[in-house]
Length: 220
Image 1 (spheres, rainbow, N blue to C red):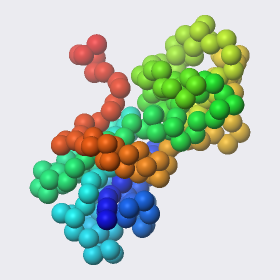
Image 2 (image 1 turned 180 degrees about the vertical axis):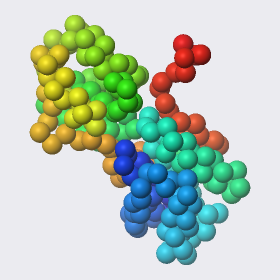
Image 3 (image 1 turned 60 degrees about the vertical axis):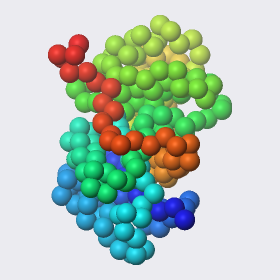
Image 4 (image 1 turned 90 degrees about the vertical axis):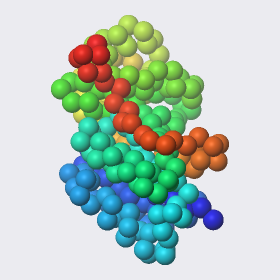
């Protein structure tokens, strides 16, 4: 029997879920600003409900970003500490890849997932015929200008930043399509599914680092 914790986050909340095999036992949702304070208590509460100990966990899987710096750092620091103290395998899942996998649509050969990086910057993932071609971050205007010169067919946009910058996207990209109910973030279920797949494939980490995609000015 496999028991594993999955941790996910959005712009407003973070989620902690306990899975037994492929079945979701329960999810706890809390304010993202409390991640550093309450995450370990939520994990403990879920384990107590199923009489499971930290040492019995098969792994901990998390949305590794890109995402909010403070929330992501708090979550990763906590799970790294649990790995250090209990040798629990860790599995990180790329949020852009998870979003594109969960919401892929065969009707649209090209889909772009956009997540907000603030200050008119975005994280982007570009999927073409179900294959992820590129990921990165950019200024939204520069990204759309470059995209408009390269894309000749209709392009589907999803993600939180696609909704946030919808007027700009439609103004700058003549071939843009944004669904009326735009998927904003991947779900904790897809993070769990991908983490379990990685676990069975033997892909586990000792310690995790945030997937920021952004580079510090010194690196640039």
